Amino acid sequence: MRKIELEIAGLTSGHTSKNASYTLVLVEKDGDKRIPVVIGAFEAQAIALVLENIQPQRPLTHDLLKNIAEDFDIKVVEVNISDLVEGVFYARIKCIKDGETREIDARTSDAIALAVRFGCPIYTNEEILNVAGVTMDEVEKAEPERPQSDDDLLSDIGESTDYSALELVELEALLADAIQMEDYARAAILRDEIKRRKMS
Image (cartoon, rainbow, N blue to C red; front, side, top):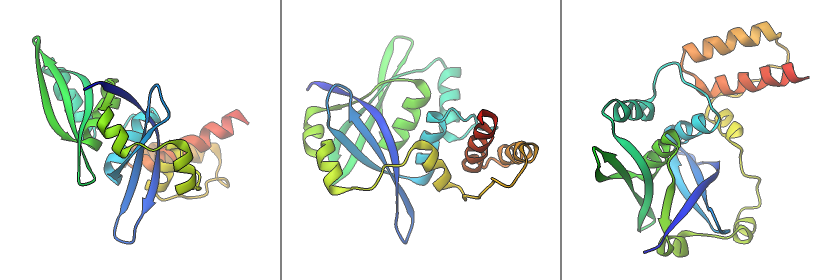
């Protein structure tokens, strides 16, 4: 079956009363169909940190997996969203070591968190795209709200605070503290505020 490459279009939040969930939106590289994948807050943050080029002070779980793979000379070459069963996406991670290819079963959110770290392509097939894919017209009719940017997502995952009254030196100290405490959502907010101040 023909493989179809996907790209990350963005992340949106969808809080429920019980827990926080996020939707990872994947878009067909050479088309207009989008696949929404519901993922957890941890995985959403893991993906958003890479998309925002935020380097955690200590490796997160997906960073650790990447470090182990690289240390043992395992190359992650692609992620394939291979199946859809009762609304649940299944993924496989294609790895190569010493010329031997292996495919490893994974949750789609974890597979994509690794794909963005390795810079490898994400694929699906025509069957899944036809079943789960929606066009932009369908998205706009079903969900008129503005999708969140990665910055919005990181702000939403962390506790949002108005830092406009603080001096630049105070913001930089808070940023250092946030990184030290591994509060990357707050670090993203502070980083953006510092960047905005320096540009104005």
